[in-house]
Length: 213
Image 1: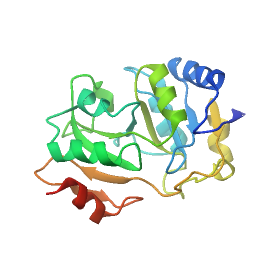
Image 2: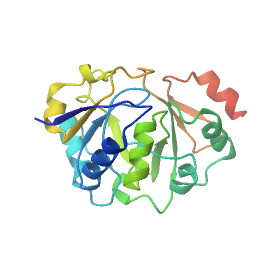
Image 3: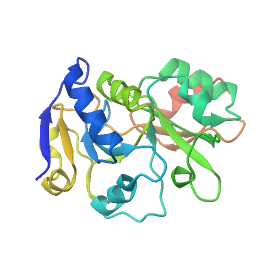
């Protein structure tokens, strides 16, 4: 059975961050809390076997891709290219938070993390000091999706993570209830104006207001 650690999202202990980062850097898979819902992720390293394990654990087809949780707002420009000014404005105003931005990927994104067909990547800066510090320490974003069997409800607390996921992951971080407990809003940044692909914690009206287009 996988190891379970109690954590504090906003006041993480350095030793915990170091332990989790080591597991991820070695290709491990970790269940972790975020500000929205619990996620299951790996370090976004090229050739990471953890990526395939996540799809197997979730029982999800590998034709899909995983969003990245990034460490800093500047990562939008680092891992995205041709990012519209209005998208940068969304990040400036609504990050850290429950907003995922789909952008054209830069050359720094390994091919296995790109969405087939359009070469995009989904990026989010979570409002979680724990997740941001882990990503910063590992040195790459965390390729993460919701911690649930594909099609099952998302976990919004450590207690609601399926036992099967805990057993199959290398480490599970229990941070108690997720602060928002609603999935992030996903916005496509590929056109002249934002396209809300999934309305989650942030209303579509708020996206339009901040984008200003």
